[in-house]
Length: 236
Image (cartoon, rainbow, N blue to C red; front, side, top):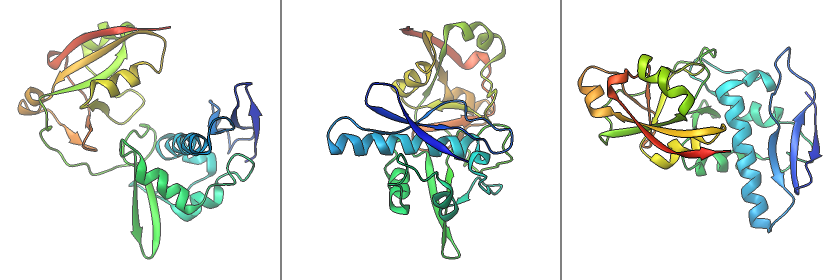
């Protein structure tokens, strides 16, 4: 696989993958680092870009770098470091840099384990349904009564008829924070809607609720009767 930096005129450098592994396209350009701002700002943006790239690889498309992923979603940290493209965007990446992204992620998106003297990393949650990954999450009653899910108004009618379903991912994601749900909703244009789920009532009725992190819970599905709609605005 090869890549090269390109510029959008705003002082930000992107990495565009120009050759694929097999027939797998990388559909969006990955932010690698910023040339603008203070050294501290550049460093922060570089780490955000690396975090996004790791999420793509470990949640959805390990085949982009031909990574060998086991059934629990782990890949070798050493292999990952070796296969990250070496060009002007990514030549700063070290094992320490990777571990910093993993350790400092505010939402606990990644996990590192050591086995036989070698380190392995995986995405904690958010995997595509197509990946043969199975993680043993603990089933438990959520710490708070209501959890939240961000979506668009155009999806509400179907959700209130059929409930929340995971679609292209393995699970429905429910967060403890409205702000995180809004962030998810804002990824696409249209009117943002936050769904409030009565998680305690759902769990007490026999619903499956899995704890991924202290802020995020996973469900195979959520029936309509546990869902309330909250309107929050429009993104152009």
